[in-house]
Image (tube, rainbow, N blue to C red; front, side, top):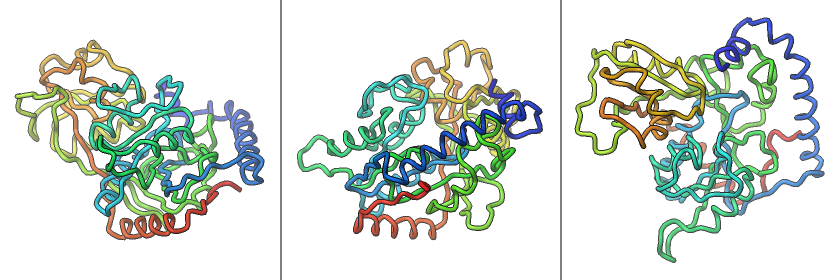
Length: 345
């Protein structure tokens, strides 16, 4: 199914014209909704601390999670105590959950589980982002009463969630696929028109050639790590044959990265984004050759991992100019805290 959707959105598939009327309906509903927020008919909640929204105008992966990880480290280095909220896509959550070490990806979602495993950041997952913000602010970091409280909130996705006021917006753009056929969902990948990019604070182009006013971002591999905890096995080296798998929005990018690292691809398998895995799914790929996967996929496989399974961790790379500008905006937002409707018009 995902393969067909990609053909429609990023190819020349004729089915887009059959879906076009539904895209018109989507445009009408989303436009009315934005207008209700702009007129104040629907309320906007403004948190007492700066809120940074990391999102995109297209459906599917474009590098949001590595960007969130980058921001966590940047803010911590600058002396802030960041917290993260997330919808927990693909998971049935009824009320906000303060993510803990014992939570699995099946309980809180793929990306939240990965972000927490990597950083231990204060994080709340829930269907209502405003409720998630309130829970996050009510909890201090650590176990002592003197522990720090979250003073900057990063919203993982939610560019179109206008009920939550935001001070800084970061839009991710897939530099390879860009905006596909330029149509709105479901005929195309767009959640909003490209006009929306005019109102964000930063446009990060992940891969490809950045257009005017876009900031180049790349994902840099930081080495293979075992999916199985305390794995004594030696990881594969450049030149070795491996099997690569990915259950992300753009599997081809991961396969290309594996090749760029010097591995010989003996096989690849693209799963649906956010797909839950079983032991049989991974075992069917290879019983002997090393199996390489993304970090997001690895958090879903740790409960039944084997020694020849590895994940390739990647880190977002951005220039110092972005760091400086982002931190300046955080300082200004903290001083003012007047909120910004950004794309609501």
